[in-house]
Image (cartoon, rainbow, N blue to C red; front, side, top):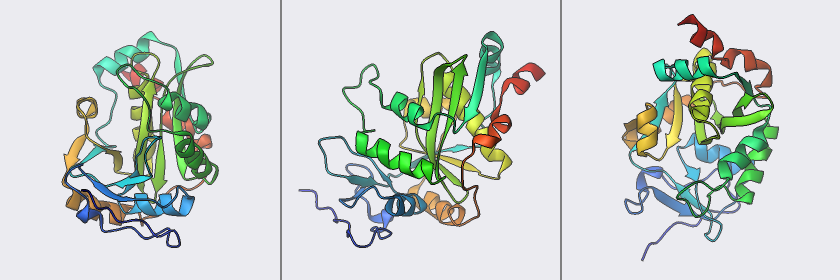
Length: 244
């Protein structure tokens, strides 16, 4: 029988030590609490994130190892540059946050459901309105063809999900996000749980103890609060594609 700590409803910043998360299932730490902005921001600042299905209680995780993208190594490769040369896409930032979240939550081949349940989508919408959650959108004329969203805590960006409706759409969004973050000295995009696709895109794994030490440092550095919509031009990739 799995015994998990129940979060204290009166102490939204308090979580168990993530180093004590279960090995099986990997990283399961606690249950309960809520998805209030205070609790979510406190969780991400401690290397913890919520992940649960609609028929489950609210579950909190901190897996070992942890999957991370380095913003200074996420650059347009030859395949991506070739793709950008073939399409007329534009990138925006914080222009269609809810649309990106809903696209990420849409059914995908081989999946029976989604962890981005309505309560989660509403919680991240609140964080977006407060200037803590952000999205990068990729457009073909007025059609959204790719995107990514996540949470900024200090100088750490915690990626939540990304999607593609056209080949390369999510990768363009990811590389555009990395370009934007690189300019602000955000070194990492936390990708949370390792899978083959993320590793193929360039993610690396860190032992949880090392990840948590870095998160404790990055989350307390001055970040970039507020809307990022006005920084859209800084995320564009077309100039890099044309330069080659």
